[in-house]
Length: 399
Image 1 (cartoon, rainbow, N blue to C red):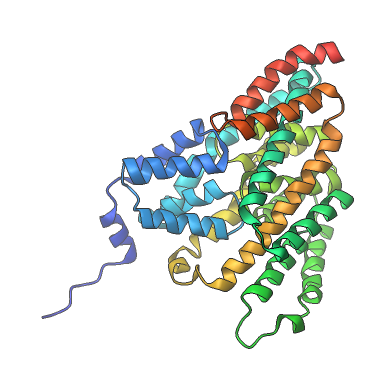
Image 2 (image 1 turned 30 degrees about the vertical axis):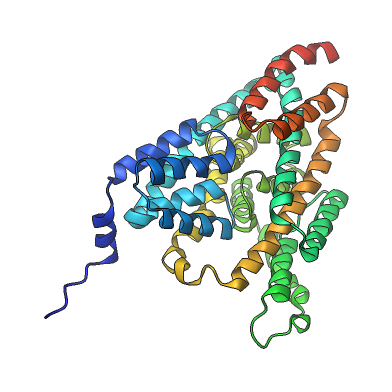
């Protein structure tokens, strides 16, 4: 009996799909428009809607996508969306789903960026961000706590990485990509070294220096603000592990300290904007880009942030099931995650010193932290909106 003719992978994918590409794109367009709650909530919505309710995506495909999204750097929810679009509709599906998911929140932050640039000097807007900036400190603090309790555990090496990076961030008020890479390599070599390789002989810290110099050389040869925006935000998307607020310390280091595009308070306002808009939290990069160079800056910043995540999702997707669960890869990601968590914790202290300047701002931050601690039903956007209303009342009294 002759063997059946084998179909191409793309044909098999299309045959297995029980939904059209247009239906999937419309779903992600809706999720990007009304999906509040941050990355954890967004990936939960995808599982509920696409796996449990509509059964468009199998549970095994969803889990593979989630694992790959956690393994690669970049925004978790956007990466999972890329992968789910890829499952049945390959690169075209991943591309269209990504655009549909990111576009609504991008347009919102551009509109808010225009309003901020046009009316930022008005008392009412200062009042809103006076309270919201303080509340964001509470949100980041709670995020750091959750990440620490989830990722560090009782591993002494992870705690050492966490503390070193946290202290470095507080003291220098900057973040070094090389520390993340070194943390991942260190944990990999200690916990899951290649066979026959002794980690103590690797001298990986010395090998890391040329990489650091290469990154510095890229920045040194930059010409023009838009090119600087592109290179910096590409680096942010390519080297920041974790999700959502994990990118905050990296952005603070470059946007405020290195390039001095924004002041401390403007940066916190940018994070606050990301909190009150739906979709991926890292869309704050679009707001920052707008403040620096208008609509072109916003477009380039958003594209540069999501492009590495997109490429690091669709390129390894076909091979992930075979290689993704190897101990060495998992160990590397664990070490990098510990470093990222330490950087977030340090950033809470650095940003808090600038935002919590009086009794009301300290009260806003503590109240936010308490609400998130005690109630699982209160979402970050609701807290930020409530803080903005209270700020309109309190700011005229204190100023």
